[in-house]
Picture (tube, rainbow, N blue to C red):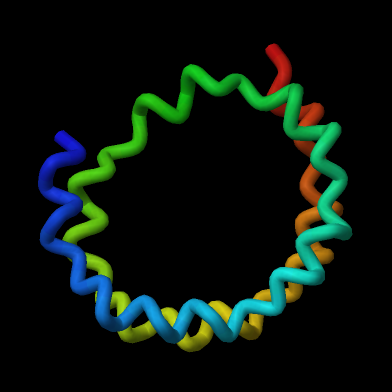
Length: 77
């Protein structure tokens, strides 16, 4: 189903550069090991075509350090 991703207007993706990626270092990646990755298969990627990529200028405002607050261990069965 991923073949439809070609329809994304990549030209608008230049705005993604506004993300402050240096903050990503604050993510405690070791917690991600507990994620049950098989659930990722349930994502319907074809819906990505409906995203207006021009709106991504707001992504720069995400404070990535907040990701630490996710209690990933709850995903365990």
